[in-house]
Length: 431
Image (cartoon, rainbow, N blue to C red):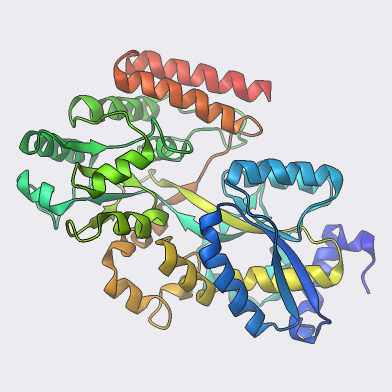
């Protein structure tokens, strides 16, 4: 048996990994895993995945805690739980909150390094199931603390009828931002009561869409060590100029995110940008009003540009040996092709597992649902959703106010960018 000290150190994790192949969960005494995730709507896929897992692993029961409203609130709850030793066995941390969570818990020996467990699965297991970029989303300071579970990067949703009415080609969505804005302007002229394009960073529930505008142009929000703001460069300036152009050239109105989705669904907006996780929701809102289409996110810098990857990674925090073994089986199953098939079909997320996209799992789904393929087509463009640390939520709110002022024309893009950098830097230092 491993000692408690070994289990709470890298030695314990390595020893656990070495013994796992011979002692699978099926041979264990019954174990109940305490699991928590964010977003109540996610229960629609977490629950059936847990059911399928228990069928395959009848000695392991999944007990979900009360669902947390969003990633930021989940993160704060986990930090509090770390102080009181009331952490769950497994959680699903938002990618943007994973760095701070991992660093905090690692310093307290409250999180497991998954690297030895992955290695114990065999020399080819990781490469057969995950792309290097995808696995990297769960790494913090070079250590694999999270296993990517849900992944999404922003895509375009568009109304092909409005595109055609404006003289565009519904089968050839623009792959440049100048092309998108030109098309949006034509839609606005052809349908004066509609918005041509809406890119609602003024009301989105995180800074994800703002990061996307910077990253697609080859920029990054922060330095590699996460301590210095770096978006005050040409890529950042191009991003805030685009934000203003959506209003001045495409007729964008500064309304709420849900209002944008509803207005798009009723034919009042030609093009919106949102998460593929909302594909089923937006499809339901549209109904049969028009044949909804999607397209990958335009990338200006084809060599260095990319898109921030939203979603979450599974993290193991179980404290005793039996639960850690069971937790690894659950995490591995959740990132496996069957669980990914369930989650993708219910949400529109892109699969984190390479085998999941094959004919045995999602092949027929993509044939029947081509709109879901847009997210999968940009998997190789995945970049980290960069994290500002403890003051991340405050920074997002401050950035959103400044971006709104830029879009309204109260601040020039140049002055607005300078203020964004200043406020972000000050709030990071204040954390």
